Every structure is written in C-alpha cells, then in structure tokens.
Image (tube, rainbow, N blue to C red; front, side, top):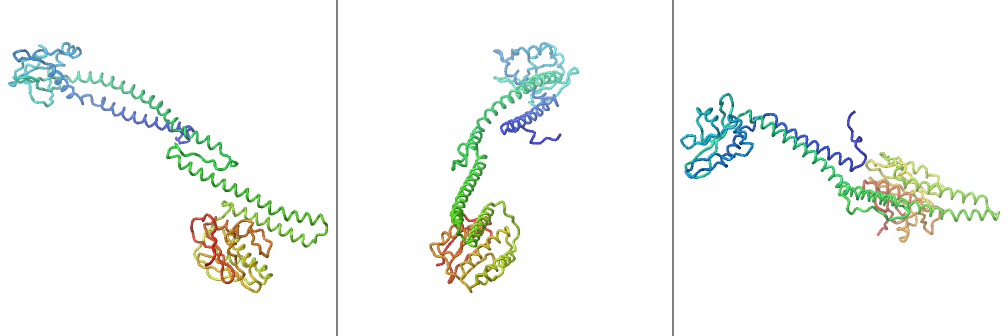
Length: 463
C-alpha cells in the first residue's frame, strides 16, 4: 500500500517527532553505510598509514646511550608481544647514514632481512620477505649526531587482522553511539516540542472560551511561533466579521420589530373600533407587505455568498428596469429615458444590479414632479439616475443610505430601505455609490470600475 501523509498520527507534535526521527535515522544510516564502506571495502587502504604510525611510534621511544648508540626500545605490552611472537610480521631496524644497521628488532628479522638494504626515504614501499608482503616506512630519530634512521615494517596479513579487529570494535562503538543518540534525540525533541506547542494548546483553550455574547474577545498572538501568528490574525479577523454580522442581524431584527409594531397597532385599533374603511385597511396591508418584501431583499443582498457573479449586460438590465417601472411612471405622469452607451464588460450579479437600479429609478419617480423626466444615463463605467425634483436637503445627504431613514417631506409611504439595499449591493461588488444635487433635481451615480469595496457608501453635496 502506498505511503500517504494521512498515515502519520493526527498530533502535530507526533508528526514532527516522527519526521525528525526518520530524518535522523536516514542520516545515521548514510553515515554508517559510508563508514562501513570505508572500513570493509579495502582493508589495505590504511596499510601504509599503519606502517608509518609504527615507525613514528618506535622512533619516538628509542633512546641512545652515552656513546650515541641506540638502545632497544621499551615496547608497550601488545606491540612487544607482537615483536616477540611474530618476529617476521613486525620488524624494525635502526641504521646510520651509510646504511649500516646498528639495531634489529629480533635475530629472526636480522636473518630474514640480511639481503635487503634500508632506505632513508620517507615514502612508503613494499617488499616480499620469505613469502610475506611487508609495508615499510622510514623515520629519522630525534637526537644529536650521528644521525640515525628507523625503518619499520608490518606484514599485510597482520594489517588485515588488526584492521578487522579495529573495524569490528569501531562498528560496535558507532552502532551504540547511534542508538544512544537516537534515544537522546527523541527525548529532547519530545520535551522541546511539548514546550513549543504549549502556546498552541493555550490558543485552543482561548478559542473554546470565545462567545458572541461577550464581544471583543480575541486570540492572543504573544508568544506564538511566527508560523502560527498569520493563522491567529486571520481567525481574529474572522471573529471581527462574525461579530459585525451578528450586530447587524440583531440591529436589523430590532429595527424590523420597531417598524412593524406601530402599523400593526393601528390596524388592530381600527379593527377593534369597527369603523375602518376596508379600502384603507387593504392599503395598510399592502404597505406592510411592501416593507416585509424590502426586508427580505435587504437580508438577501447582505449575504455575500448568495451573489452569482458573471458578465453583466448593463444595457439589457437598464432597459428591463425601465420597462418594469413604466406603469408607475405613467401613473405619476413621469417620462422615463435611457441614454448613453455602457462601457467595458462588468462582472457581478445581474439580479443584484437590477434590484439596485430599480430602487434608484423608483425613488427618482417618487421625487420627480408630474410632466418631468427621469433619466437613466449609461456613461462608460458609470450609471447615472437623475430626476428634476426639488433635490436633497444638505442636512439629509449624510443619512440617505441609513436603514429605515425617511426624509420628513417624503410623499410615499416607503420603509426607508431602498437606498440601504442599493448601498449593500454596491459595497458587495466593490462599486461606489454617491448622490449629489443638480439644478434642478438630484443625481445618483454608480461607478462600476473594479476597485476594493469601500467601507461605507459615499455621499456628497455639489459645491
């Protein structure tokens, strides 16, 4: 079965520990394999080096008597045993500048090597003596004149034997060291990871204590690893958006209840008195239905995930909007006009743009005097809706896009949500919506250029 990351434990600390341990095992295996190849692939690789070490060791222990002649060295136990028991496998001789040997390691060596001439050169050489292949190295003795040299030799069979013993001993030492280091590494990593992940566990406890009924609670970033801090910052931003949405929801419910309370009480009073005009009651019910419909539309446009983004045919949406509002315009004796040409293609929700334009044009129809025109003008990346009414009072401009706000002099019985719906749609798409006064009338401008969504809809008065 193929290996997958999901096969690791679910704990982040356990995954890191497994990953670190696997990496250390791979490194230890690589180092151990390299060392084993060096030790066992060619056991004669260090033969000359072994002979050189022997030469320097003997040269450093040799001493001279009062006449300057060399004295037999005091060999360490193992080396002395080898010279005594294997006189032809471990040989040394001391000679002068004329090549005369003045000291032999043993009589057996003197007899076997009688025909060979010593050399003062420090380079390694090989020599066959009585069927034994010897590795030879020379070193000059320290001390006063006359100058003396020492030539040391070891047989290749002895070098192989010693190397095999050393390799086995070294391999066992390396294996024990690796196993001990792995155990120590696992313990240290467990302690370190437990300490490093402690802020993450505290973070989880903080997150479990968060409650929307206690606003303002956020996760602390102090002491967290830098890799985790962006996640916490994003989570805090999500909490901020959730609290804002919750606040809007509570405010919306409170406002809706307040707006419904008064008309329902009036309807109840008229019904209880028994002298209500049925037509007036139907008008009041229609007004309540219109308010509920606007609340539903506002709730829908507030949810960003409900939008369906595609390429919008702005001119087609504008024409359909004017067609749907023609009966209302004719009832109020207002002429609807479509002018200009749209600009480049716009990405967004066509239905949301239709709702926005419908509310703007409908408000303009209610504000326009009889026998005047309401113009919907397409100008590149912007849409302008203008009426020829009395305009907007300067003190009312900052309140145009607030929910349930109605100007005192409004002639229609709207719920005060139309422009709030327009502002929500514009903000969700990154469009900019503003209102200015003209001479005469008022003009609402919707800019469709791609830009970051503004924090609040913009309103301004003409100079």
